[in-house]
Image (cartoon, rainbow, N blue to C red; front, side):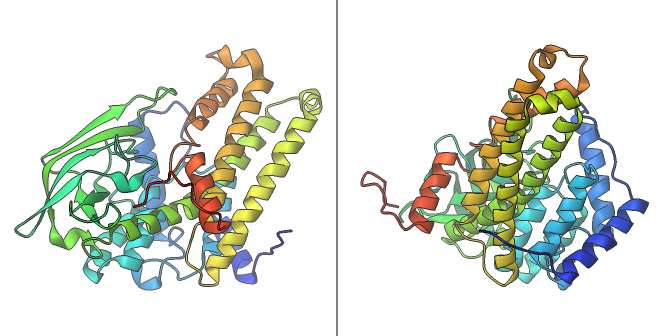
Length: 387
């Protein structure tokens, strides 16, 4: 059984933030808002939070945070979701590249990037997946050729969220073709506003264009934008994914709970009673998923580094979220076909969005392999390729 309680400090932070929110209510962003409106509202809201240090709470004080733990960070996330906050535009920077730079970056890189990440002055995207390297991330072929003062980066990335609005991209690429695939990789910070970069949006089933293809054609990357050393890219990329599966997934878990609350509030008492067993199952599952995530956050607050247990959080959240969205469509039924029904429109949009959640950030199959091999200690399949 998982048992936990909030510390006195966490509750103090919660009450302080609640008072702050009374004077600084979040902006309202409609489901069908334009991308421009979404960007403008997201940047303005994150900047307001950052100016009073309500983002990056677990970052060290010297880099703009409060030096608190991930538990306090999670408490603030809870309150943001509870008050109907829109998604923070700089999530990739806050939850992935920021923590990676704090741990692996040079002082020059920290000084250059961290403050702008907090304030949403610069937006980041993730350059990992490629047409031939999705689940097998170590198979990336994008290559950075050494040149005077840096690298010339060439290749293609795909499924790159918000690349069309990003200022920077953290790219996993190959800097050596001689070594084994896991050892010839490096981690570069790439300015997205320079020549040689082409971004092509991909239309999703929802009608949105969040994902993109990104093409690099001999893009110059100065050597000071290499994180760690050449050949350490795999280690740093894995650290990035661990942070994603812990911090970012926790925020999404809370959004699942908000979606369930909205669903329940939109139904009559008779409708809720009719589907009581379905809702009971969903509530039980969501509470269990959140409790598991909190147990991991408490562990990290004690000094542990995020590890493969993040795959548990990602797997259970994504599959429970799909189940929730499918249930909502089932309950709403034919209402989802009525374009003038705002509630039903949101339910259908969320359902379509949910279909990709067991693929993005590592498929469910990959998560199960990680859990089997790295948590349960089961042997690898004989046909698994050795890297």
